[in-house]
Length: 102
Image (cartoon, rainbow, N blue to C red; front, top):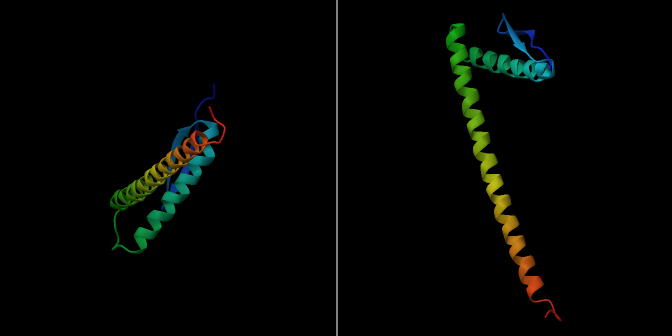
């Protein structure tokens, strides 16, 4: 069992210490880097927002991206399921019409 270790994350010139399992460290750092970039993008397009307002705007933006990606994924999963059902139906039809089948 691994123990949690503090990881220093930097978001817009502020540092946060967050405890996480060693195996999650790289993913956490990657997520923090993504969040920092999004916050900087929003800050560049906003009129001097406070850190807290910027964090909320970024959270809403990232949640919106996530929801759109989830909808796309669900649509792709449904199309894949439909395609597989169609192939299964064709395969069953081909096997049933096979010559010499009793």
